[in-house]
Image (cartoon, rainbow, N blue to C red; front, side, top):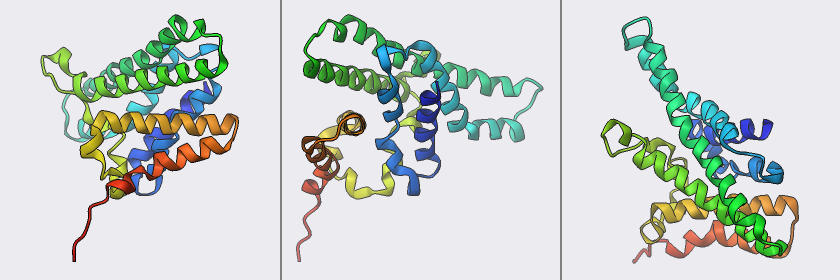
Length: 215
């Protein structure tokens, strides 16, 4: 469970101190991928991840309720909000777990199995972020979400990296970020030259989309 706690803290740190910890965006899935032996992380682990992350991420809401709210039970609203958003992170790891059970475990070839496992992380994580950012408030008849979990926000500290955003779109950039996490996890497990080349490409591709300045 320490990996779940570490992952949530790494992701949270990127939002608290984006100027210094924006690189956490490329590392927050690493503890989970490295320690996810036998597809161990599911709904419970995802919910714990959400409780830690969202309790810190919406601490501004707790502050507002404390100093501007009224009533003795006002902090229950904050607790309920954290618990509610944590359901989405619970769905994230549960969804990943189901994809592995249904598809990845049927693959015998190790290389294909690793590729398929990466796809499950990409699909489940991108779905989790999308639902939270755009659909998490639909239950309240408001087809909006909680957009501040968007992993692109801390990257505003390195604007050159976001120059390709009009070409790849927000979801496309999420996939690239998630893939970078997975490649780093792969390099952690077994380093090779191909992994290094892929990492350089993932970090350096926005340089191809830099604006051209004319004299």
